[in-house]
Amino acid sequence: MRAGYQKKQPNIIFFLTFFSTIISLISLIFIMLSIPLQKEQIFIHRDTFSNIEIAILFGFLFIFLFHIFSLVWIFSETRKLKPFNVGKWLLFVFGSFSLFLFLGEKIMLDEIGHEYLSDWSITGEWVILYLLFIIQLIYNSIILFRLRE
Image (cartoon, rainbow, N blue to C red; front, side, top):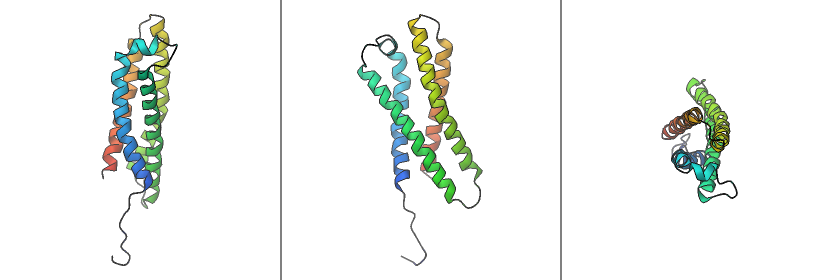
């Protein structure tokens, strides 16, 4: 190997971000499909956790870990750049916003659960919830494509 030449080695944060991105995408799609299909099991039967509820809970845990790993990866990549890179900082801001919206998903699921038990109309809450899910999917897709660079 030539003097002064150093091959770029992927670090552990890169691998954690990559694998958590894949698992998070799968989890998010699973959650988006299973919540409306299993809404009675999720929102009405509250005495014990069902298998689907445990799978959804783990899915949300994977999505949360993905946000942490991706924000750490973006921050570490941004620090390496000498000239200021607006794109990386905008991605960091979008990731932080996406993490904040993750809390909104939890709130919307609670609202849907309460209103579903009361037999109220929940159309607006479903729209907001799936809008938040779509923003999560966009962020996950952007990170996946950025990791491939």
